[in-house]
Image 1 (spheres, rainbow, N blue to C red):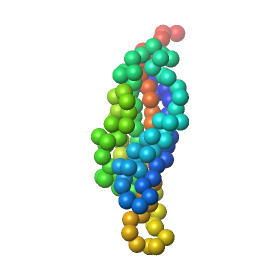
Image 2: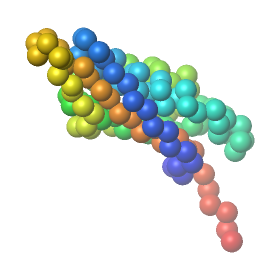
Image 3: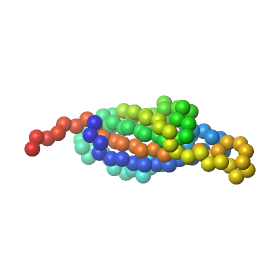
Image 4: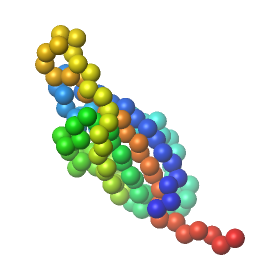
Amino acid sequence: MTPLMVEFGMGSSLRRADYTQAATRAVQDALWHNSINLAELFGFDKSAMRIILDVGVQRPDLVDAEALRAVFPYGQVTVNLHLGGLNVPRPEGDGNPTVMANVALSVGFDMERADD
């Protein structure tokens, strides 16, 4: 894959400590910053798009990767879950923390190099 673009996003789950929800919101944040139509720019079908999604949260084991793949309307999505993000204790000191997730979304295609 030749990476052509990287977008970043942040999402949170304020009260439920839902790591998938925080990650989903981070993916949506990254996607909504993007207005580039790479497939059309390079003459590819959108289904040929390769997407590598790196997700950072404090509990990667609690993230549903399939739910994250479902956010994308097209493309072949690889989800990599990492220790990262941030858990913020609630001011009351009890209950669930606020969960913050960070994502990096790399988009590209399988392209051949032109001979120079």
